[in-house]
Figure 1 (cartoon, one colour):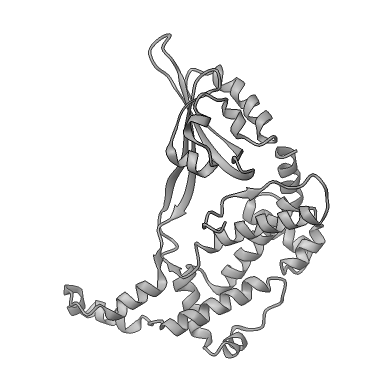
Figure 2 (figure 1 turned 180 degrees about the horizontal axis):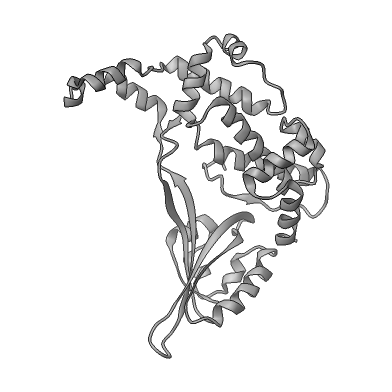
Length: 308
């Protein structure tokens, strides 16, 4: 985490004690920081999602790793020679191993196959790495050697840092042909410029929302006065920085926190409703299902079934 790799998790304790609660808190914090980095001082949040390959494994029909990419070795903290030749399921945590073995039986019996499975890898130092794995079985000539490729992909967005973007925009004095276009001039007059101090205040408001999701927030005008800005700049700034309205931002963050608590804890749904600022359990459940396709109860049951 100190190196900025927030996709690692720490394996939970088998006991329901303070250590287990601390581990859950650290894992939740890692998820929150990872998600927040998509917003932190960045613009263009609606750009096309990029698919970045983190790990690649080529596996033979005996289930042993024939080849692996260097980045996978770095992420899992193994020397490549320690991975190549060994069984693929040695890289998985104890909960994912039986799931992989069940999947493996299906893979061996198919000639060609494209599928996916959620697995959790375990690094040499004991950290957990939950991953969506895309699996391809490659067919070849008759009686030829078949291989299975397991690919772990990170979904990300190419972002442009906001401060640099604004400074470059203010300092850029080059003339372009568009500037002489009356429609462009009209559009430029209507567009508001956010100063660096505006950006800082909008970030502070964002932090205020994220730190107090259980609250009933006052009107935007009152919040603006408290932070020394105005309601228009907060509303406009949230659209520019985070690509959503203030209301939508708060709603998204409440739902994201609620999902983590539903999956990663045994907290009651009534308590989660309070912690995430929803008015009532029925309202929370309906909003949750509308967003994720499952009620909180259904999602927790599904999560526990997949992670016994």
